[in-house]
Amino acid sequence: QSALTQPASVSGSPGQSITISCTGTSSDVGGYNYVSWYQQHPGKAPKLMIYDVSNRPSGVSNRFSGSKSGNTASLTISGLQAEDEADYYCSSYTSSSTLLYVFGTGTKVTVL
Amino acid sequence: QVQLVQSGAEVKKPGSSVKVSCKASGGTFSSYTISWVRQAPGQGLEWMGRIIPILGIANYAQKFQGRVTITADKSTSTAYMELSSLRSEDTAVYYCASAPFVEMATISWFDPWGQGTLVTVSS
Image (cartoon, rainbow over all chains, first blue to last red; front, side, top):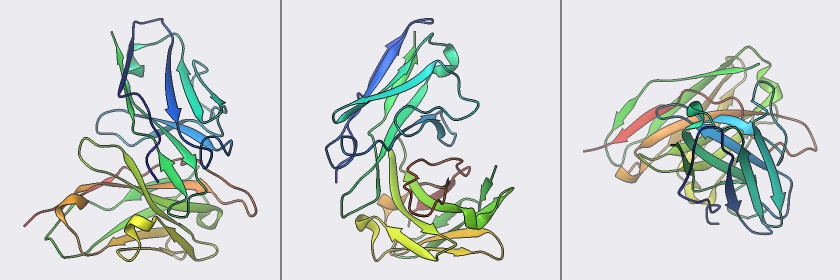
């Protein structure tokens, strides 16, 4: 079971929108609506931003939204702000026999 | 909401074992599952395994099978992750993370997370 594939980096100017992709297979992302997204600032623990593809936990800004098409899930950050600069990871439940959950490779978001 | 507090940093010799604790407070321990996720320096997140305290059932990633043991003490609301036969590649920050336990349902997210425990394996 390989990690889900994310772009290494994405950048945008304040106020712009960016989208991070997360590509898996029919055994994980494509097979279930169990994709979640995490934000991680340097030296900090990850923070849940989106669960079950498109649901936002209480307290997470509505500038963050999630979607999925086929084997690829996406996280969109609209109205980019300086504090959004962080690493982002996707995760999915998987039917693999080798593990229950798989994470993405991670994406560094830079606010220009 | 539950809060998770982990034990402090550890320095271990190759071939030894380490046991990291994760104490939950502010919620009902038996209502959650606890997963362990590690992050090597400059690398991504890696799921290692989880325990369902109310059932006493643990699941492990095949990569760590035989080397990792995850347990839970319901009396103290504490989960433990023990990793044996340590090697330098096990140097990482180890996180515990919780998820609601709902029978017959799949809860696939992790929230909240502990603060992380740095385990350094060095001779």
